[in-house]
Image (cartoon, rainbow over all chains, first blue to last red):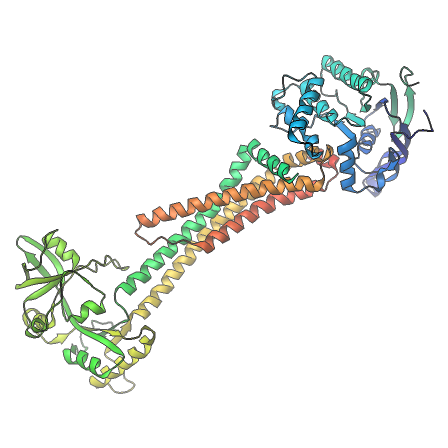
Length: 237
Length: 401
């Protein structure tokens, strides 16, 4: 790691507490780490270890109880709800385990959606969305709605939607969780390609070591803390 | 961005045809039922009012018999023609009087006959009761004075005895008296009480008294006042004069009755107001039911829509952008439903009014009220859950079950 440059992401003693009093749950118990641009980080851990909570924090989908989250040096904790939305809009992309596509809406329109909020003009928007769908190998399924697509295809639509804006960081929460093993490899190879060719920083939550093997670094969570931080050494060492 | 959001809202409406059409249906039914109910209620009221004014302008009716026992109480002393004459002479506020007597009679033309009512009166009768002539004219002074055997036919009697033929100059038999037809009145149609106002034969009063009843009694005196606003005062003057002529002691109950059409109108007015209130209440219930329908659909779709909001927020939509889209959707559905409801309501009430022979009344106030109510329900219940969802953390909205 290079202390001289600004990290893409820096967490300082971040905590997240759900509930109060007796029923209090400390999902994150003071997490600190940094992620540099271009990394492909796998976040692992048992369920309830805080890995998903951490990913939601990184994605500005949820707010921390205490500590600091610096995104490109900017303290996210000081931002308003609308500023957080703008941060997501302009710098982040999401891939969820359950795909989270809009129902009854074509793949193309789903992929166009982030660009709509970026106020990209319709012709440009459509061109970019078609390109993103072609990038994920779905150029021939653009006008299908989610219910007409397989799980793997839906996840690829979700990835296309996440990368259509060329985000700084792609956050993936168990992206292969609902897929069979052949599809899993397909999706992981796609993510790896995006990381290597387009230099998109990826943070991916998974509980499968096979999937984590595609990453360049693995963070192991246990009881709301980072237990181990392993860099594979192949890239960026 | 506004335009894009509107397009997005329209696309969402098209994508969910079931949800959209049920919402629209709820509003259409609410709006249309209010318009139909109230339009028909007001049409019926207007019909009753116009029928009453069609019976005569500024009309007063004096009948023997006490108010308490009804006009046919036999003990009451009948009027005479002089009573009418003196009322007209003494009271400047009375424009005209028509003393009249009536009885049922069989009228015959050749082999056609018809059971009608024969009335004896003067030409003032036509004017006071607002009859105009379709054919011929009223009686001449000579015919009135001599009790000539002439008659004027109501439109119904003319049709029954002559069909489309011109009856002027023909002779018909009324209760064994042969009378020449001198006029036919224009039809007035059915009254609100369901009576055929055109089913009569009119003869001069003298003819009626001498040749048909053989008595000089007058059953009823029709009066018209000069000024419609002075009706209660004219009524008091007429009553006072008749008391004097009939020598009724001050304070005693009179054995006659003077009624104005206004009083009858007022009585009927309370009835028609009750009718309107009843129909209005039914309409209000259907509006409420429609509103609950809209509310249901909106609330049922909250789960799905909350997830949608979560997705939109997670990919970078701001709360207000999502809300604006939902507001546009709710307004478009409500507006469309409202307009369709208004058109349907007006169309149905127009044809129903024609079918029921009621005047068609536009009900602009109800159009506005029902539209505003339904649209508000649609907008409020479309908007409020969305507002709640848009304030959630995106992750909470996504996990909404």
